[in-house]
Image: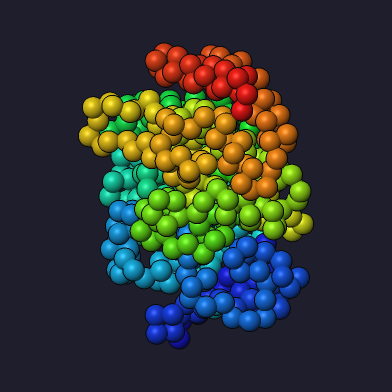
Length: 419
């Protein structure tokens, strides 16, 4: 019988076991109070053992997806299907505040250092170039885990702005995504959309553009990490919608509604059950923003929740970019405009109107007298937000800015005509 300890905020809160291919999770006495969503809304604190159908989806949600998962498993000498072995190898720095490690290891520190081996720009660039063969930067020394398909590098940045490797118990604080080989201006696209979100008052991850030895890179500050005044890093616990709803995501397509993933109604249901009143308003804002900028790739793993000691809240917006700008573009990889999360039954991002968002919210139990003012406030701020964001970024494609301005105006006209 293999067994791992699950730590959260300096407490040993659960044990993870695998027997004959079946995974189970049992909370310890340090996890309290009973009924609280300490690890996951899918597994509130209980004295009963959670079985494979709940433990495995949560653990899979902490692990890399797709080709990154296959390559990391191969390099570690593990089967691609070995969820338990992968989390044992990678669980000391994964999404959220959990540390998953052998039961015999020393307790992890509540506040971990932000990297131990400093890298200059050339060294960072070398690791970005190596991502096709070393996903997430995982090698013999670095063991980190983060879900997602796009190549990305996890690094730590200290208070002096120096980049460092998350080695020997250190944790990553930033996600670096280099330019996409088949999507022109993807870095500028996501940076612009995320800056627009920030300037329009949408709670969103801090995102910038950096260049490392000629490699344009999107740099996103992890919202599940907090750098302390002493330079240490405190982990902030979070989970995505697939984990919260016990949806297996070893196969990446399962995060999309059309292939078994969450629905917006199921996500709103989680907020109604676990979050403070009014939290669902933030979901309306995220849905509307993604629809307005034309982001079809808003799916079950791009919606997350922060699980605090006192309440659950919707995590900041992240990974938002305009996918519609690639519609019809002659790229190696066709960009699907099918919605990862459908809105009022609409399947295509180009068909979503402000009226559909109001209808979708009504399906959650949110009356239009509450949802329409939310949309009005967002749309009132968006025109200036587009201008401010475009001015802040040194290289923003003019066609993309024009397209986003046009989409904002269309949305404003739709709402003005009566959503």
